[in-house]
Every structure is written in structure tokens, then in C-alpha cells.
Length: 415
Image (cartoon, rainbow, N blue to C red; front, side):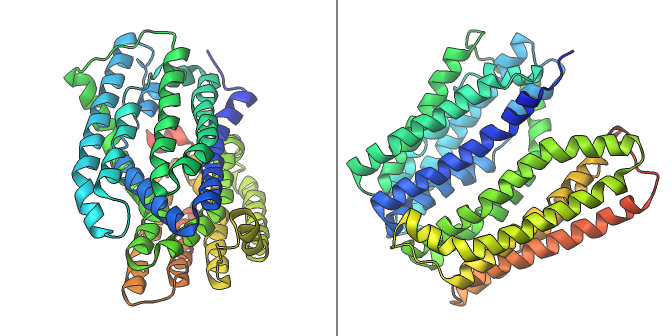
């Protein structure tokens, strides 16, 4: 029986973090070469693609990794067939959305630019899934090689295309280059030949497994992305570029903290449950992440503005209210990280989900603030309120379980 190694665990959460850092580096390159206004337009293009992808995320790769028959050749072929269907559907949706989006954002990207985004999911749909299958055996070398390699290729191409094209359209060849690298590397690394099957029974399994996860993906989009769509609709492109840069910089530490918690806190909590010492294990984790949150908000509040000016350029002027509000929202998310991990450890996955619903609902006051002509930092204040409500709700639901000595194991809670 294969067991996860320390190296494997690190790769499992480090590769997504590296991808986030690569996206941050891409925004720096584009900001420097294109300026805040054009950067704002690239963010709208990226958000449009992210919206359709998250709204159709059936987690095919996760199903391949978790299913008992995931190693079977026929199962993998059907998962690759499902990925092809998804890619075709997303491409068609993006083409259909191109004219309405160009009309809504009249001074932004053209309909043809939006339509060309369809090439990204179309190519991603024929990526060979063999490297994801290997995760079943805790072998994450393929993940590092394929996804990490594609991120490196993207970073190399970013300044080339930005200099050649000189505006927001440069994002298209940059993203296409990244997914093309992912596609090629996945086929080069594959141990099995690429084949596709479309059997109804397997497609039904994809639907049953993935459909409930789409709601969570949509909540994640509302939490992390939707406010930028509001900025795009009610503020200038330059303000969108500035807001996006500040938000991306604030969220990165929170995302790293969350992924690290999955590798570091989750095993400790599982062992604590087995010895009936979860309450004792929870206290130092809660204190540590609270300290990390306080350190982050102070550091971000003081350093973010001069750092953005130096790294992105003097054209990126971020107001102090926006900086402190975004920093506080991210800090609250960091502080509630162990709460979510504790809930998952005892099999109460509905606890973080209920908190995330409250966080997503904060998009409503953010939209109202934008419609009423409030300043940009009002949207960040709405995010602070959403994070605070989510943290309070999650802690209120979790606290009774920590107070009892009869804490169920994950298997008992989910059986």
C-alpha cells in the first residue's frame, strides 16, 4: 500500500501555490509593460474565463484520483472523454458570451478577443490525465513537472507577448502558451496512450460526483473574484487594475496558509482525535494562526503601498483605506483557517460551507455600494464584514464539538 511521503505532501500543495505566485509574477510583468488601465482589461479577460471554468468544475481529476477503479484504463479514457466534452462546452459558452460581454464593457476588450478565450478550455480539454492518475499512488512528480513546467513557460512568454502586442490582448497568447505547454508536457509524461471514451455510466458518475461541488466553486468565485467584476462595471479600468493588484497581493498569504494547513494541521488533528485530545491540539493552532493574522495585517498595512509602488510602478497608487481593508479581510481569513481544518477533521464539512455562504453574500452590499457611487474601499469593507460573519458563524458551530469529550472521527461522522 502506498503512503504519502513528506516530499509528496509538499508537492501536493506547493504546486498550486507556485501557480498562484506565477500568476502574481505575470501581473507584475503586464503591469510594468502595459500600465494599470490595460492591466485592468486583462483582469476582465481572466475573470471571464475563470467564471465559466468554476461554474463547470466537475472535479474530474479528483474523481480519477479518488475512485476505487481510477487505475483502470477504461475509467481513465472516460474521464478524458468527459474532459473533452467539458472543453467543447466551455468553448461554446465563451463564444456565445463574447458579444454580450463586449456590449456590457463597451470600452473594454472586443467580442473577438473574448471569443478567442475559447481556445484555452478547448486545449485544456485534451490534456492527458495520466499524470493526475499517478496522484492515486502519492506520486506528485507529474503534477510538478506538467503544471509547474507550464507556469515557467508562461512566465517566459509573458514579457515577449506584452512587448510585441502592447495592450490587454497580450494575455491571450500568454494563456494559450501556458495551456499548450501543459497539454504537450502531459502527453510527453504519459505512461498510457491517449484514448477517449464516452460511456453513459461513467459520464453519470462524473455528474453525480461533480455537480454538488459546482455550488462550492461558485461560492469561491463570489468570494475571491466577483468583486472585481463589480469594479469593472462601476469603476475605471485603472481602478480595476489597482484594486486587482492589491487584492491579489493580500490573498496570496491567505491561500498559502490554507494550503499549508491542509498538510500540517490536518494530520495533527486526526491524531489528536484518536487520543481524545482535540481541544488541546486546537488551542495552539488557533493561537498561532491568530498571531499570523495580526502579523500579516500590520505588515501588509505598512508595507503594501510602498511595495506595490516599487514592484508594479509609480502609476499604481493604492489608497490607505483600501490597503487596510483588504489586509484585514485577508487576515480574518488566515485566522479562521484552523477552524475550517478542525471542522473537516471531525467530518463536519458543512461548517466551513455555511461560513462561506455568509462570506459570498457580502457581494450584495459591495454591489449596492458600487451602484450608489461609494469609493473603491467600500467594496473592501464589505469583504471585511463578510469574512467576519463567516468566521463568527464557523466558530459558533464548531465550538460545541471542542467542548465535548465525545468527538467523532471523520469516518464515524461521514458514515
